[in-house]
Length: 320
Ligand SMILES: Nc1ncnc2c1ncn2[C@@H]1O[C@H](COP(=O)(O)OP(=O)(O)OP(=O)(O)O)[C@@H](O)[C@H]1O
Ligand SMILES: [Mg+2]
Image (cartoon, rainbow, N blue to C red):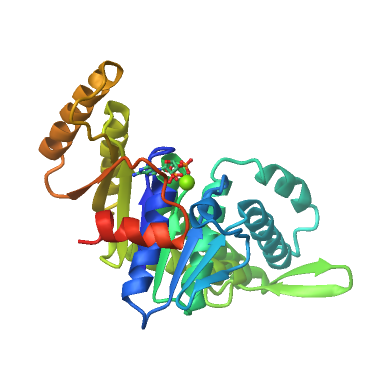
């Protein structure tokens, strides 16, 4: 399964270009099935398609579907699953008031990133689509989402080391006193010292495997990271930052869409400065970013909206 991400600064054209890309790709690959998903909490994918979208997958054409992911709902579901799971795993820790922690967790840093990653995982598991196209939230969140599997892996490995130490201690006690038991109400639970039977260790190992697979997927050629940018200084700085921060996690940038460049034979006085900045930025971008292909897309007099417009946009500016 190919995965395409479109990321970049606000307003550069992520939604327009990802929507147009999905329309073009599905139009010229009728044998394959495509899904475009907006992961941006401030959705505007439906506006680009001129169709009302929701948190339910909607078929737009024979082989293209779209969804605007409800991230608030994802966060709630994620916390609920986590809470159920933890309550079950730690049922012998009755003095631990988990609900209190979950109320706080909703507002913890990283929770949005986790919800976005959970959402990506859900689509990957569906096995219904040959390619996924993601219109993403502002850069900061997306680069952190892409880095999350590797970061989580470091944490999980550390947690597994700690758990291993706990189980070793338990084993020592077991050797002296026999199996450790916990009594909850009428139930007597025997606590294991065996890694292969310990529910927490099993959970950590599964999670670790899942994160490792995701990390490898994001680092592989199946994941295509496309940056959408504009010919302005700030957008160029941001583009370089995205490339560098993804590089740190061994994630390659596939392509840069340099959108909304201005074409004028005789630019009016008020816009002359902008054109000079634009030409300078384009030159600098080509000079400083050598190994990534840059595709120029001009600013059109009208915003492309609806499937027909988006296909035309694809044919004219995105198709190689
Ligand atoms: N090449 C273009 N020519 C003309 N209009 C464009 C072009 N690209 C994008 N637009 C318009 O610019 C506006 C912003 O584009 P878009 O919504 O795709 O950006 P975005 O990066 O998704 O923004 P946000 O960060 O707010 O989600 C939209 O009105 C869109 O129709
Ligand atoms: Mg958008």
